[in-house]
Length: 427
Image (cartoon, rainbow, N blue to C red; front, side):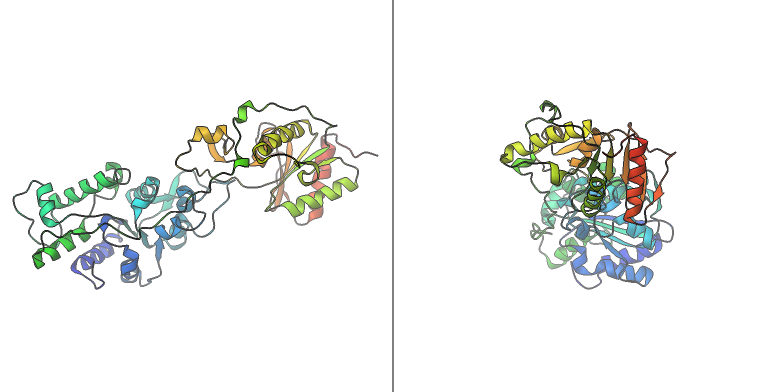
């Protein structure tokens, strides 16, 4: 693929500029190297809108450390889930209303990634972060989705197509040539080149393969491979593997423990990384007023417990303590989408304590989610407001959302909530 503007590049740029006046310009193709290295996306953005920076690199997004979930990376997480760092694809679409979307080395990633892009390309709409339906216009974008794979010589392609003569050089590849390249891609990467995906991109364009094919014909090198086997293909991050202490034989088989002491007046649930400071302050304030408070750093002792026993023991203790507590205060922490190693099934993850189901959707195991399962009517402290969640997990609209400006607001809401439950401090 030449660095200069070839005839194929000229056609692609001209066609894109015309197409985006009415809809999304969309291309699915096989290339010899990433298009980002050729500067084509930036050139397209400059030619179409005068702004070469209007480029969103899907591959760069999916190879960012911590991007284990395609949905979260490209479409964002639904409400209640941790949002990954950086800008998602739909945020880029929403913020710019135009631009080039480039996805190099698509064959290296989950087929869900190309399916997500194909849906946007086909419908001209995307789903806003936190929304349930597609309502965000994606019209006026250029989408370039490319895979890298070996392509055999002109003579071998002719043999594969059952032809008696080579295709004649032309500006654009003939339909039979495009069909053959699509067949090769489907054979090599069936999950990424399914008919519904290819159809949403109006088939495989094959322009870059055709350009090299015509070049080899001009040089008389009909037995030379059009594209060699790719090297340096993008590598998506691998989800971290669970430690021994994160696994249990079977969550459902863990026996429940009776509470070993008197019930706590209030159970404080929080995130060590996000809300530990406020939760610790509240624990101190409540204890100073005579309440019997459960706070894990104070009340959970795992000394002398082996790594293999830790999680099972904590599940037993926490479940008993939460169930027998008189009231619950939850400093909200977001859920995380489930990312599993390929050799581990969802059923195994659920059974062994690596995953949980929330609203029918699998999420990463969370101690706070375990705690919530056993709580009754609880007070939730969010980033800027307090609210009540009822026993059935629904929001109490009568209580509403009460604004939090200072820590004193948190304490006042907690004292009122405890009084409403009949929980009073020890005199």
